[in-house]
Length: 181
Image (tube, rainbow, N blue to C red; front, side):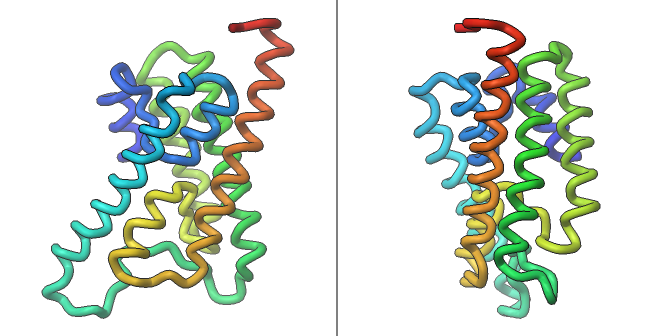
């Protein structure tokens, strides 16, 4: 739901790219100007860290009994399976976002498509990995709570999934629209 609202509010101005993995997907798909990639990644990561620190400030009076919403693997899910699930989820989310950006003009439909995709992914993959799909979202609470267990799962998986989605999307788009640049 929150992703849909962000798309509706910020989409017109910034493309509502708030996830570093999706920034990489858009860059690899050639839908994002090269000069914006590094600033987007820096600000998205800083936003995730600031969000984690905000959670720490708000919940500090309650003691250190919480990991501040850090993403965690479910019992029995290995890090390798976690990386694969996070990569798959991010791949699907990125393809949804890239398709919405490239082929859907109405912001409401983009928001429903991407937000709906994320909701379904959370329902199916969330119980196993916490449904990170966003390195900044996982990094912020992990650093603020110093819960660093398997943090690499939530960086490697989303980056791999996003890069694969960007490359696939670029290939599909090139076949549909030869020389789109």
